[in-house]
Image 1 (cartoon, rainbow, N blue to C red):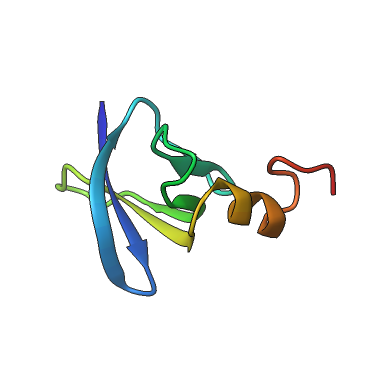
Image 2: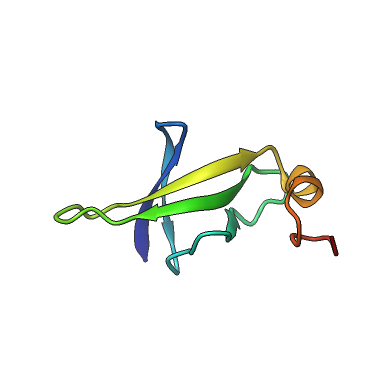
Length: 76
């Protein structure tokens, strides 16, 4: 498991563990479709630190993310 820190506008939203390291443009979330979804904008590795910083844009849930992100759950 990879430990990551989700950061939006310079503020840490939460820390979580993922099975893989996402890339820019990936959408991550928990398995709950009503939970927040996050679009990864920047992946930041810092030498000597265990956490990988993911700079993200937060969406309220899967429906909102699908409406706002081209190519995620839509054919735009």
